[in-house]
Image: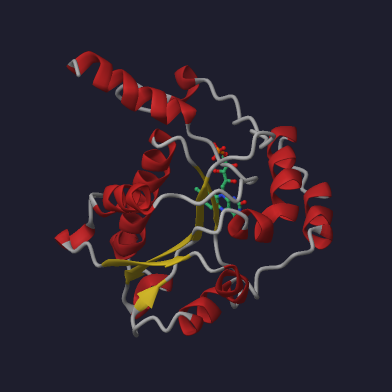
Length: 213
Ligand SMILES: Cc1cc2nc3c(=O)[nH]c(=O)nc-3n(C[C@H](O)[C@H](O)[C@H](O)COP(=O)(O)O)c2cc1C
């Protein structure tokens, strides 16, 4: 392939990627899944470490067990959004769409990826921003997965564990001591009627500052 069209493909993939929260039950072929995870493992890493692991879940019962602490009800949270004065209508629209779908979007495709990274106890009490490097690196991995999945015509949904969700997942999948769990990540074929919540419109011109802010 010519270099120019390779570059185009990369930008097209970046433009095409968006969060998918409605999936088909059609399974993701193992070879495609491996390519996507391999792309994740190619991410830049702090300390040249790449100390990352994945637990991949296909069994619906096991997925339900892992998601046991994820809240189903959207009522309380949507109540918060109604009173969230600083949010734009675009932000609110995303939350109204996303909140009721949290469990469904992570279980529907029957391909739930749980990434893990190793971090010290000081992660939540950082001395400076560099203490967060293990957390930053795993998000590079996650972005690679999101883009690779998009290039494979798949979609992804992710959720950050809140409250006791992380501890529960670490215990349930028997993660070794020292590993952390940044997000649940579902990969699958988008349902034909899967919505696409619009991104906030941002003017690049207003965000780029030359020489000084
Ligand atoms: C750090 C981070 C946390 C997120 N947490 C959640 C979440 O808990 N639940 C969810 O449905 N989506 C979550 N998302 C997805 C965002 O809602 C989504 O990326 C955003 O609305 C922009 O939409 P787009 O991905 O379609 O561009 C998260 C994304 C990021 C980067």
